[in-house]
Image (cartoon, rainbow, N blue to C red):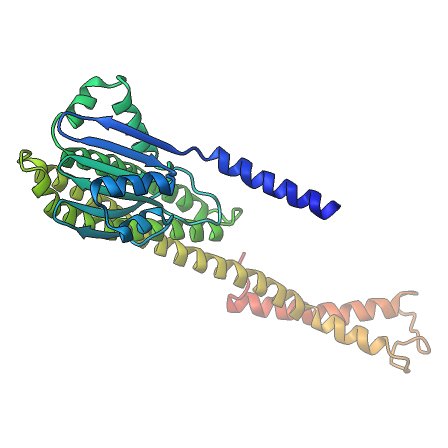
Length: 339
């Protein structure tokens, strides 16, 4: 009975989670083309569009997969491309990218994503409403190629903004590296992982944007300046890659510096403990001998009184302290003990 109750709760929880993910299909009619945006799409919606615009079945499978490697397939009347971008939120321990699938032809543009690309969602809202009429008219009055440029441009700008945040994190880590009271190794490892993740996004992104620039010309013959627009996007990607490379080199320096400082700190602690142990050796040896159940000079059977009733105790202390003081003076002379 209890197991059945738990199973029902789990099933209802999954249904609640699935229902919380909203499926959206926005259709925006421009002057010369139509933009269809699908967030968390149903397979039925995508298959209907595939029948209408003659999409390849393999491309449908790719865009329905939540993670597929970046690719570009070109056909006579359209081309299909998959791009990756960093998501809006990143949970600790999870390193997944957001996937954007795009079908573009002369009179249509279809975007498929999971709804976690905030700049793209905001762009859809702008085109659906009249919050920014000037920008809306600028991107919808010409061609599907110009709209594709706008989409990639806002996502690359967001990627550039993310890379600049890493610079701010580097400044914070620099302060913590030289602060012995704050551990920084985990922060360095997490930021290195984030830099590598963004590099894996930006490096292939440049290649595919170049491919898009070559393929989009045949669907946007009226926009002579379109290649220049995409060149500007490529410049931004180059800035992202350059920023990430510099950040990566800086992180390697911080990692080495933290390792050196941590090693130095550990060596200092070990040196102090070693010196303390070494100075305690005479007292340990004397205490060991006088702790034996044997007759020793100055022991219980032969208790001299020339220094009072504590003569034996004083002799043991002196026998332990004098060698320790001599060793300390010698270590100080060698420079092994610093002030």
